[in-house]
Length: 156
Image 1 (cartoon, one colour):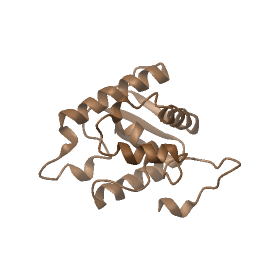
Image 2 (cartoon, helix red, strand yellow):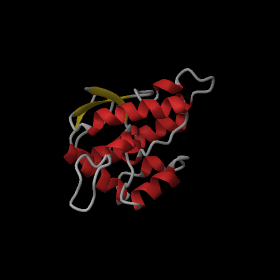
Image 3 (tube, rainbow, N blue to C red):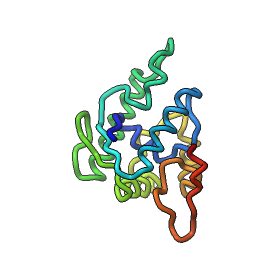
């Protein structure tokens, strides 16, 4: 499967615990999370609204085109390009394997790829999720470590 993602959503997916802007947004994100959790999803980086944004595009005031959201994309793309040593931008494809997702998660937790999070309304929640070892996230871990188990019912 290929999922179209804007750059900052590569970060948002790391801390997604089932909360979001609207019930339709959350339902859509959960479906995409199920696909990504499979471990072999191809992410195509896009500029502007992506597959996660789709349920919000019909709102009277859609924040997906707002300049601060575009700035988040630019900051995330720069951080991710540095981390992955490859340009991340529109048209780039990134295979979301367990190794890639774990690399993103470690760098998110240590703050290396968090400049896009400045002034984001979700930052306190994401901070808490990262500080709590990403417990309850719907995309990761793909496989349990020796100290944890994956509750398959938590992402349905």
